[in-house]
Image 1 (cartoon, rainbow, N blue to C red):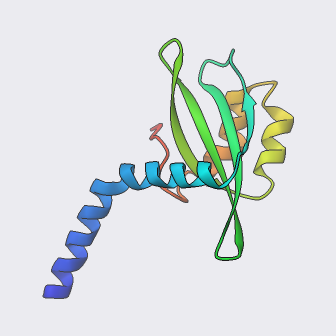
Image 2 (image 1 turned 90 degrees about the vertical axis):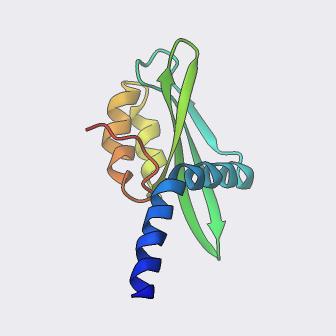
Length: 120
C-alpha cells in the first residue's frame, strides 16, 4: 500500500513541477550551447526558433526552443527534444512560413518532453 501511495504522490508532484522542470531544462540547454537561431519577425505565431546540440552522458541530444508570439513585442518560449535532422528541414522551409515549418518539423516531437503548449 505504501508503494502505491508513493507512486500516486510522485505522479502528482510530477504534474505540479512540470513547468519548473521544463524551465530548468531550457536554462540548462541554453548554458551548454550557443545555439543557432532562425528569426521570423513577420510571422503571426513563431517569431524565432533556436536549435541546440547538447552532449549528455556521451550522447548527443537535439533541442529546439520555440518562441511563440505573445503581445506586440514579447514571446513565450517552449522547449522540444527533436531529431538530428530537424534543424536542417526547418532551415530550408521556415522562410516560406515559419508556422508551417514548425507544424511539420518540430511539433511532431511535442510528446518527447511534454513541455510544449496544448493546441487542442
